[in-house]
Image 1 (cartoon, rainbow, N blue to C red):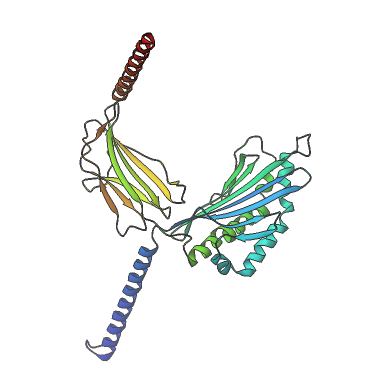
Image 2: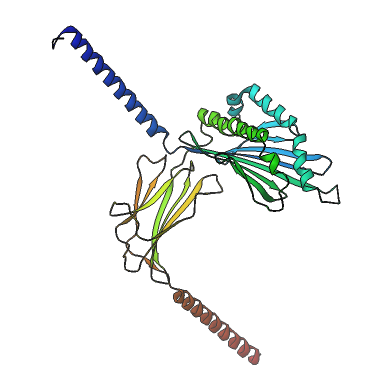
Length: 349
């Protein structure tokens, strides 16, 4: 085939077209990845049963997504309550009816853990509480956590990580039902229900709309000298939503390990936002200069870089003790002057 022939030109065009098409797909995937990165969501299902050895007295179920209550069920009312109106549209009447029928159908099955709790109780009218806590988490649409906890009379008895697939006995006194939990029927049911009612249900809801407005973190950085002379750097991020956040220390713009780093873990605030504190303890020889706290969150267009204040505050116990002592002396002096004045006034009268 001669160079420059129509067939060669056609083949070259096809190759170029395929290259541009592949490159376009790649670019779109990169932008889609950037759009969805750091998207972390958590779904928690709580089932609580109260009853005696004879019957179930109370049964309630609560669904929380990203710590926001979305759906609840109560045995007394025998109805599913939707906390956020648009969720009814997302789930649809058929799905809600299926969920309701499932709860009513398995209501009697919640009696067996109550009977287990009351097996040695001579008072058959005593109330016992059994709880099932199911939690799942997704990060960038990938399931990263899927756990079930069985809690009887306030004490966790069994726990399973669906990835591992083995029930862990937490309470040594509760050993009578592992053969049920490990049975193929129960194993298949838990996997199915966790996928359908925990993971898939959450994806369906968060895929329609955010449950609340996203909020960027408020960040504060400080440093002080400990009583032992070491430098303590602190970086606090609070008031942010969603929960997913990354915080780390850099020195002169570089990652590394320079001291003992610790973290509070991501904790909830009262307003359903979150809080995280990371600290770095440096040796007394390190001045703390050049350190920055780097924060990455979906609501920040780029990683936030926060410098450490240059002058540390000295935190010495003897300064506090001296201040308290001076305050006590001043108070006693004032009291003495008042007593003398009162005594003189009394003598004159």
